Amino acid sequence: EDGGFLVAKFYRPQRWSDAAIREEHAFCQELVDAEIPVVAPLADDTGETLFTFAGFRYALYPRRGGRWPDLDNPDNLEWLGRYLARVHNVGQTRPFAHRPRLDAQSFGVESYRFILEGGFIPPHLDVAYRSLVEDLLQQIDAAYAAAGSIETLRLHGDFHPGNILWTEAGPHFVDLDDCRTGPAVQDIWMLLSGERSEMALALSELIEGYELFRDFNRRELALIEPLRTLRMIHYAAWLARRWDDPAFHQAFPWFNTDRYWEEHILSLREQAAAMNEPPLVI
Image 1: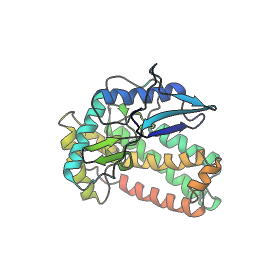
Image 2: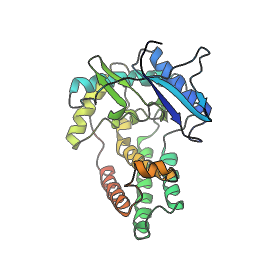
Image 3: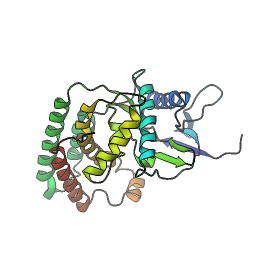
Image 4: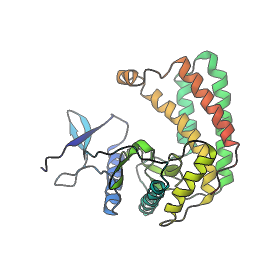
């Protein structure tokens, strides 16, 4: 009605249940109600946000512009830390009933099994992949055990720079379709990159802003590299699960080649070394 543009987001069949999608939408609205700049789906007069057309489910969002966030700016990092704490304050008020958890079983073990059972690994890399990932999963389990009891809550779940749009007024956040239950640090570590010293400096700025609104459990820092490793294993399986869709062959032509799996194994070996390093300290 106001002449603005809309973005239609279509949901793949069997990717999420209707209940899970509506729970994502409700979480978005909770964040908006808390004055957190999330781009939430639009509702009709009955409050419905999930619609169907020709058998396909979709949601409508207002189109928002913005640029890639400057994460070299400490003020921006502190700003993001403040918003993340507020997201997590909302997230802890109630649990998800229909959204998944982020844990070693779902992101690691199940992803690993799918890749193996689907025959995606080239024969000459099979032994190397199996032994490496099984060792990584043991390292991850050990890291979780050493961290002890960690609070879990509703998360954005995929809080990387591509899901942050920056304008002169500041940031706004998009794409909560991977929101799930997990540790708070999951929404923090994806903003860290570069050398260890650079990550420690950025982390310090993020947590400085975060702790203006919410305490942060330092024991979660030991989960940063395990969570990064789980994301890498899970992402490979995410692509593999969609490889029967011809559109994915066009969008990801580099996937499922010998070179892809060779580089994937190399990256996982680097993660094995990273998980042997002491956690970042702030």
